[in-house]
Image (cartoon, rainbow, N blue to C red; front, side):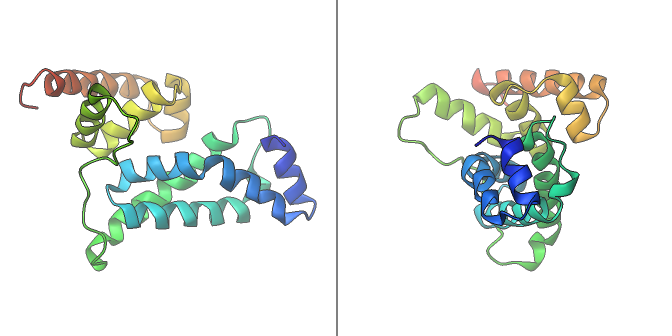
Length: 170
């Protein structure tokens, strides 16, 4: 089943079809939420709440668009809400080291560690552009910032990553 078919099924009363979105995008959403919240518990909460938001607002999804791009806006908003509540939750301490994938090379691990040292906003841009493959236009539209600002911030973030990876202080 593709995203458009799953959305149509949900909207015609087959609510279990929403499982398609959770199964397909939960891992990706959690990874992005970890970058934005810098916290495992907050990332899990934000991801779950974003899926609830998506379910409730599925009528607003345009099947001509990619589901994840639409969903990402909801996820991002939930992550920012989680970060603003951080001071009230004891389990919301900031996590700065990425999860280590056993199949990761030393270079990949170094890159992820450097990405996690960026601000969450810069890390978000780097991951969406260079790992997820989003275009500048998609970044601008989803993040609601001008394309020129996206390009400028990405340039600065890449320069900072290069300094970190070459051993210079960032």
